[in-house]
Length: 301
Ligand SMILES: [Zn+2]
Ligand SMILES: [Zn+2]
Image (cartoon, rainbow, N blue to C red; front, side, top):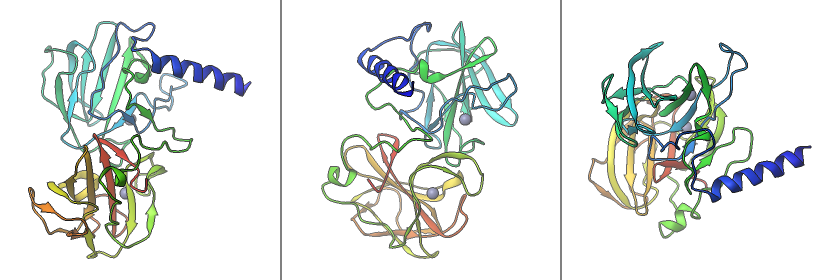
């Protein structure tokens, strides 16, 4: 039986990839609300109305990133639900919900497909780092947003129980014309991928690689680039973001200090800051991220 199911699924997947389509039953497909198209935690249908489950999908993003309406509609709700800022858009038959989001729209506003409706906030109870919880509701039933989100080449679902997908486009090091410099000499204490977070106990995508090193250890740039952000951001604490070529960014989180400013051009292996434990961190370590076109990829790849 499993093989039949597997084959059926692969046929379905192939169909889905082959057709630029609007899924059966949906008036039209949804556009992705963030720049990236990866899914940190998929939808888990609750067995009962109030039962456990995950009533939406978590899409990894950056704090302050633009959140867009998935389809044309009217803003039905802007406010707080259980302390979390939420925006809800009515599309007729269905509603889309977005959280945690600082709204740029007001109740009653008409919005177009892809129109910015807010900015992503740092904390969502499901996410250690920033992510958007996107919900899809018809009447009072929660449905899987992935059934209607448009299929794009870059779409990938991170299966919480399966092996990690390899990032598209070959190795990031090759893309940047060499290999990445290891930013600190320490060991990998937590790899990129699904894990149960040591502080929150929540299972989700760990969007970088943790390198253990004493506080104060110099952090080196993984490749030549330009400093685009030096700031303190939610769970990441103090971080530095470097912009490289080909839509690649590297990010260095939980720092105790920075040694470069925004706009600085840095060489590979140049010291940019010091290891710390700012943000959500159980000890001194570097949370090192490689992000391609807004989507975190495995730095070890
Ligand atoms: Zn969620
Ligand atoms: Zn980490």
